[in-house]
Image (cartoon, rainbow, N blue to C red; front, side, top):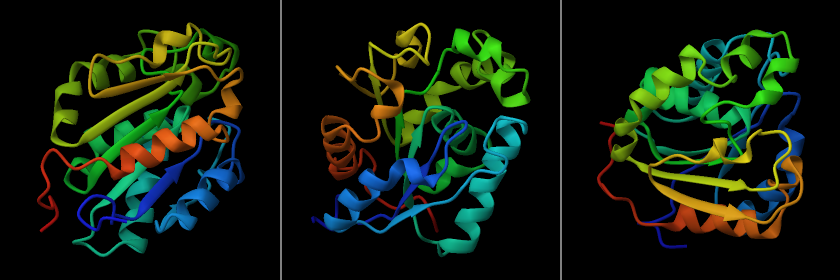
Length: 207
């Protein structure tokens, strides 16, 4: 591994109804390739708490597990991508995170969120105030390497192209199911490549 390109610890953030178990295949692969991989269970994991509260858990985890001057890379799956974006854009994560990768995240909302009467689900509906606010300030993501990976066959993110953002790098895969994304070899390869991509701003943002 090139220490100038991929030396950061990686923090994986799961989606709604998931646990860290969903990253088992991806975590094993990245560790075998030399990365220090971290993950934790969002609590609660079924969307009862707001995106803001879940993002605060990233603040707490990072403060407890990384040195104050240690930058890290962030990978968020599904709702985890929105939680990660909130951390980066609203809670100071932009000063620590150098690569942000989202996988099948509803950046523009998903119609399936209408079926769940929870706080986080409401915030992932199309045109929710939270998503509009994040997308109105998306320009700040230019300060890091941002990659969105998604599948056009997604039946959880409806419409599937809600995962599209006019920002950063975009990778569209032919994966048949939402939950398969984090286990799919092509997706894992894409994550690895994004984690190896040289930084646009290679100096550490943490002082």
